Structures are given as structure tokens and as C-alpha cells.
Length: 345
Image (cartoon, rainbow, N blue to C red; front, side, top):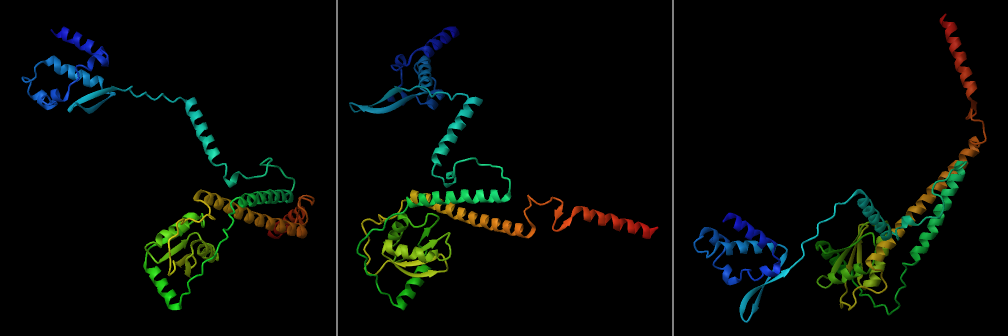
């Protein structure tokens, strides 16, 4: 009996899914035979082979879908065969190397607008006969990069929209003092980061003015005098009134007495968030290049001063150091040693 059961079990396991769909359990057959009920009460199961068939069907449907649908007012189960998930291939050393190359190529394509890629064409490392030639070559390359960065920054200039400028509300000293104190007590603020002023900053100001009369604009990082420029630009774009600059990085804005929220809260003559970030990168690179040029020119000036005092180090005698020869110094040392020996004896 046992070998017949095993033979039947193997045949049922090899059977396709289409033959087993007829023997799938429906809702009416599953209700009286829950797993706990079937294992605890063997007498109520009509046939043990039927129970085995149900287990086999459940095993073969591990990669299928079973949906509960209503047909003619009766719930039924529908089965859908799904292909088993494909196993991931074992990554060899060559495949891993190719994958890393593809990722590196993608990163390079994404960083095409990186200002560090702007450089004059030619050899990166050269050998120079003198320090003067090396410094001059550095300054020349830096000035070429400066011109390239200035040309790049011209693409991010947005022309100002010409239109009627609204008359600002005239506030008294008491009103300004009250607005300043009210803004300091409240916690609503708009940050300005490395991107500077773009459309999202003005949009945030209008969203704050929907429920508040004042808003603080916090600039970080902020150079000396840059807060005043930001205040004038934001007053033009948003139509608000700058009340006061607190410290060196916080500007208090008042929306106005007759404020109406505009339909387009992000002005047209502003950059997007992405282009503002690109512009800030080029500006940062331009500032660094100009600082590098100033340092290199200072080094070249110090080199010329050294040559004027002590002569060119490439043409003069290597033994001559600041007006004294090395041979004279050694002779003096030998004479002093001989005198010390004679005194001792």
C-alpha cells in the first residue's frame, strides 16, 4: 500500500497545473476543512487522498496568483500561473569590473557641467627650467579658466521683466518697530542657501504671507554687505517691504497693507532650483580661481624681489650663499679648531 501511495504522489507532482485546477479547493470545501480543523479531527475528512491533493496543489501554486471573484452571485477562486522568479547570476570578476565601468561612465556624464572640468587643453604636468616660468604658466592657465567661467555665467543671466512698479506703503517708525518685534517673536522664516535667490524663495515668501504679515529671510552663508543686496532684490521680486536687517544675515519683510496673493507666485525672471545650483557652483569656482591668481602673482612678485637682492639662483655659483663662500666658512672652522688644540697643549 505504501509503494502505491508513493507512486501516486510522484505522478501528481509531475502533473501540469491545468490538470490540477479541477481539484483546487473552492470556498465551500475550504470552510469545513481549515488546517487546524483537518489535523485535529481526522474522522471528519472524507478521504485522506483528497487532503493530500489539496496540499500538492498548494505546493505547485507557490508561484501563482489566486483571486476571489463573484460569478452569478457566488464567490469563486480564479488561478493564474506566474513564472517563477529568475535566479540572479553569480557576478564574476569581469562582470563586476564592467559594472563599475558603466557606473563610472554614468557619473562622468552627470558631472559634465562640473566647473572642475573646465580647464585649458594641454599637458597637465610640465617640467620647467625656472620657478619664474612655472609661476607664469600657472597664472596664464588660471586666467584662461577665469574667462571660461565668465562666459559660462553669462548663460545664467535672466533679463529683468519691465512693468509698472507698485508704490510701496509708507510706514511710520512705530509701525516698523511693531513689525520687527512681531517677526522676532514668530518662528516662520525662509532660508537662502548657496543657490541664492531663485523662484522657490519668492514662492515660499508668498506662502508665508498667506497666514502671517511678516516673514524672516535668513541668508546662510552670507558675505558682508550681501544681505542688503538680497533685501533690494527680494523687495523687487516679491513686492514686500524690507523692515530691518537684523545682524548680518536676517532680513524682516512686511507683506504690505493691501496685500493680494498673485496668481503666479514664482516670478518669471528668476532661475529654477537646478539652474541656480549650477550658477552657484560656477560662481564659487570663479571666486577660487581669482583668489589663486592673486596668490600666484604675489609669489611671482616675491621671486622678483629675491632675485633683485641675491641674484638669479640659476646663473650664480652654487657655493655662494648670501655673500659668503662655503670654502671660506670651512677654512674658518679649521683655523679655530687648530687654535683650540694649541691652547690646550
